[in-house]
Image (cartoon, rainbow, N blue to C red):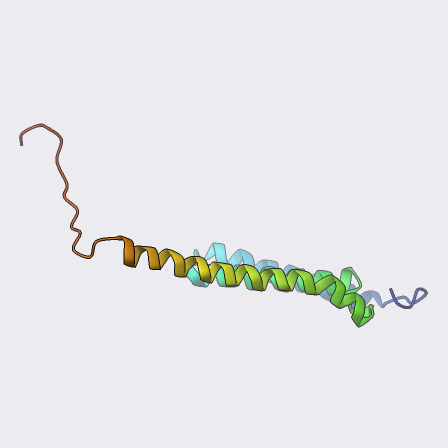
Length: 118
């Protein structure tokens, strides 16, 4: 902490602890209501980042640190997430380009039945 002798009120910790339980309940509700597809994964990621953010900010005392230390700890993972997103977009583009240019447009699959007569 930047102020070594400072004590933070326990009410902040209790409030965040309860908030983490509420967010975990929402995470559980995503499974309980059997949400599927993009909505499911979007909600799961939002709840995960919210919980990680509250834990880092309050329980790891990041809120009370100097800006330089906050940036030194938080900037590298943010850059990694941005680069992973860029690579995912590039991978989709490459995959779809290969499908477009390396498959025959008039390709029709032919299914053969096993050697028996029907």
